[in-house]
Image 1: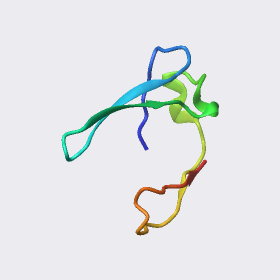
Image 2: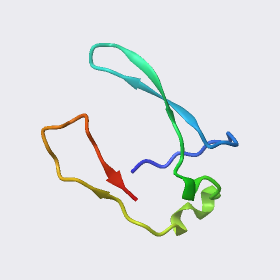
Image 3: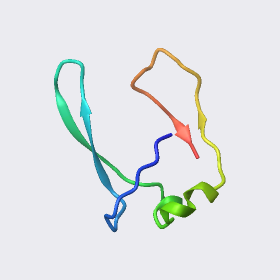
Image 4: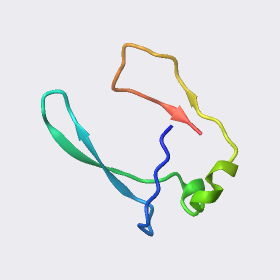
Length: 66
């Protein structure tokens, strides 16, 4: 899990990704609705869990639930 903070009112950010072949790209990421209005100092008080499927051959298909 990676926690990011932005001052952007919508909570969205762009993350730069670099591929092994040298290609770079910018990917838009948006926060989950329950965390959009949480102050940075209050993020640790959020209770919850992350459920993910076990590893498989399908490396481009990840399903996680909150």
